[in-house]
Length: 521
Image 1 (cartoon, one colour):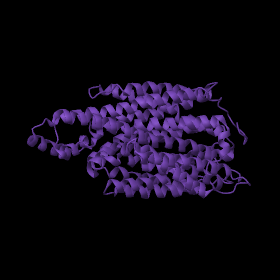
Image 2 (cartoon, one colour):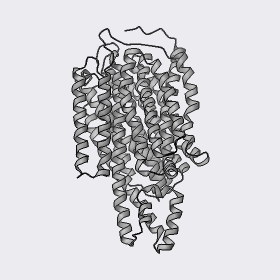
Image 3 (tube, helix red, strand yellow):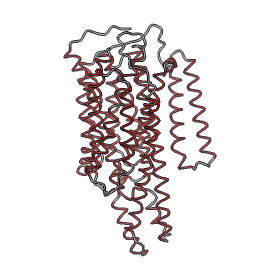
Image 4 (cartoon, helix red, strand yellow):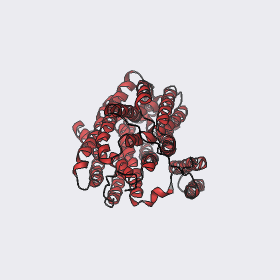
C-alpha cells in the first residue's frame, strides 16, 4: 500500500474543490434534466421511453460504481476521475444532439458510465484526503454545499434554459463545469493507492455477470406493465433475472478478485446500510423525477415555475446535510440521525399525497422542503457510517457499494413509479373516454400517454377533433390530468411505505465508530 503524500491544508482544500466540482457536475445534470424532460417528450415524443431516459442512465451508473470503486482501491482514483469527467462531458454533448427518444436513451446510457465512474470515486477521495471520520464529517459539509448549489440552481436553470434556449441546452451546461473541474483535479488531487500485496486485480467476468444481472432486474421491473403480469414471457424474464443474480453472487464468493468482495457483507452494519441506501434511492428518485411531471403535467405549471417549486426540495437536502454535520460530532449516538431523517421523510411523503392543483404555492414549497431536509440527514450518514465499518483498503468499494445500492433503488423507483403512473392514468382516461362515448382512434391515440398534457400541438389537434366529433375536449383533458395526478400520488404513497421500512431497519444500526486505524470498526 502506498503511503499518503504529505499535503498542506491549502492543497487539501484545493483538492476538495476539485471533488466539489465533480459533484457539481453530477448533481447539476440530474436536476436540470428532470425539469426539462416533459418538454423533451413533447418535442421528441415517445412517452413510453420517458422512464428509460432515467433508467438507462441509472443502469450503467449502477454497473460502473462498484467497478470504479474497486479499480480506485487497486490503482488510485485520480486517473479514473479525469477519464470520467471527459466521458461524461462527451456523452452530455451527444444527449444534446439527440434527434429521437431512442438516441437520447442510448446517449444517457453512455453518460451513466461516466457518472458511475465519478460517483464511485468521488466519495472515496474524501476519505483519502481526511482519514479520520469525525474530521471527514466537517469536510463533507463542503461536498454537501457544492451539491446544494447544483441542486438549487438545477431546477430553475433547467426551466429557464428549456423555455428560452430549448431543452438541448440543459445538457450542454455540463461542458463549462467540466472545463473547470479537469485542471483542478489534474493539479491538486493526489494519487493515493491502498492496494494490498494479496490483491489480484479485478474480475472482469464478474463485472460482465453484474451487468447482465442489472439488465435482467431492470427488464423485470420495466416489463410488468408492458407485457402484463399474466404473460409467461414476463415471468421468464423474472426467472432469468433471479438466475443471473444467483450466478453472480456465487461467482463473487469464489473469485480471487471480486468486483464486490463477499467479506463486506459479513458485517451487519454494511448489510443494513446497503438496504437503507437502496430504499432511500428509490424514494428520492420518485420525488426528484416525478415532482416536475406532477407540477407541469398534473397542475399545469410552466417549466420555470415547476423548477422554482422543486428547488426547496433540493436546497434543503444541503441544509439538512449541513445541520447533520454540525450535530454529528456533538451527539453520543449520531447513528440515530438517519432514523430522524426517515421520520421526516415519512411525514413529507404523506403530505405530498394530499397536494392538489389549487394547493397554495407556499404550502407546496414547504412540503418539498420537509422532504429535502429529511433526506439531508440520511445521504451523508450512509457513506460515513459504512466507511467506518470497513478497513481502509475497502473504503472505496464500500463507499461505491452504498452509491450502487442507492442507484439500484433509483432504477427500481423509475420502473415501479412509471408502472404505477401509467396503469393508473390508463385506467382513469379509459373510463373517461368510455363514459363520453368517444371511439375515434385518433382521439384515443392522443390519450395513450400523459405527453398530451405537456405538448401544445397535441392539445390543438384534440381541439380540432372535438369540433368534428362533438365531444368536450376540455373535460377529457381535465380527466387526464386527474389520472396523472392520481398515479403520481400513488407513487408518493409508496414512498411513505418505503420510508417506514427503512426506519424500522435504521433502529437496529450499531453505534457509529470513530475509526482512526486501518482495522475494521
